[in-house]
Length: 157
Image 1 (cartoon, rainbow, N blue to C red):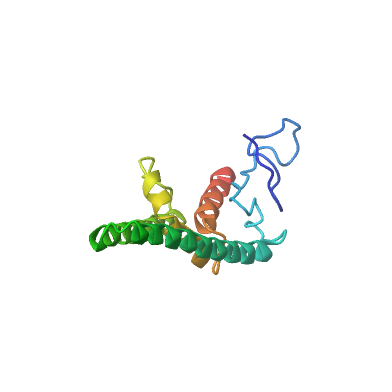
Image 2 (cartoon, one colour):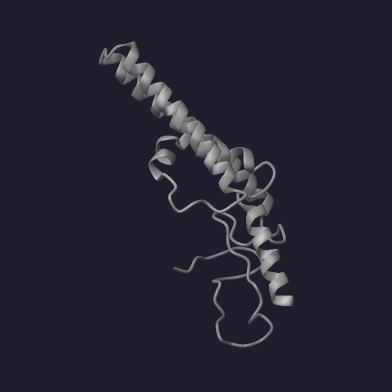
């Protein structure tokens, strides 16, 4: 599947067969929401980072409101304090683990056996990781930059 990418670096990873200087050059891998603008920090890179931070914070607030309604439903159902505590603790633990795994995923590739259910239940942690990372770089930029520099080094040697 080809994705539209913004900024310098252009389209898909494969060559178009048209020859020229672009063929045989290591192309940067696009990052979600940023395309290849992370390479030279062009094409509205700073605005994209600000938008990602703001958007993820708004999503955290909306998600917390939805969870609040869910917990209110537990209270209205009169399931008891133990079940309510288990639900709150479960979401808190999953959010913490999801934050940790998402944060780690910004600097190294994820294992193929990653638990997607944990990330879905702990969606607040995932969104908070994106919010905090957007203050320093595009989420995953350090990993992509290291891989791109290594690929450029292999091409030169």
